[in-house]
Image (cartoon, helix red, strand yellow):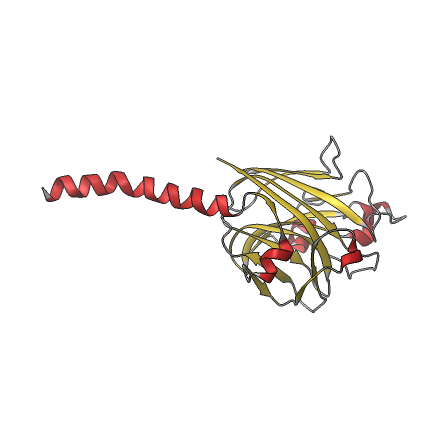
Length: 226
């Protein structure tokens, strides 16, 4: 009898785990109101102060203030593997003061993959700076400076079409582990195509800003798939 129970338990556990994952994904699938999640305390803010965007911002979302170091707003019930993450972002055209994007497959504040943008490079007259407009990173171990040194031009690129560096633009990140494609403003051609460097296949999703950066986030849409 004990042997049968153990066998039954071994069969049921994977099913229970799969249902829990599906339930977690359902909580963060589809169009998500960041403003509402903030107001209902369904996010965890790290090294930033988050506030609702003003009524005249153009979109309903949230603003993150500027502080030294990276900042995050983690979606508490998120558990994302493969699929598409879309969101409107707004940074500013100030050199080294605007790093804005999305973190995903996160285990914690220091273990995650991310795609982020440098709006101050979007319309630079320097072609090298323009080629640093969108960036993939994987923490720990594959920070931007490591990737630029060891794999120049592979994990960062310019963006097409070129957005207004002080205005809103639409980001779309398609993830089919380990493949990632990043699109800007409904372009047919991706601005960045890479393979993930981490072995983390799923985890939390979070809004992300870099050192001394703030930014605006709106119209988050998450479409998960198996």
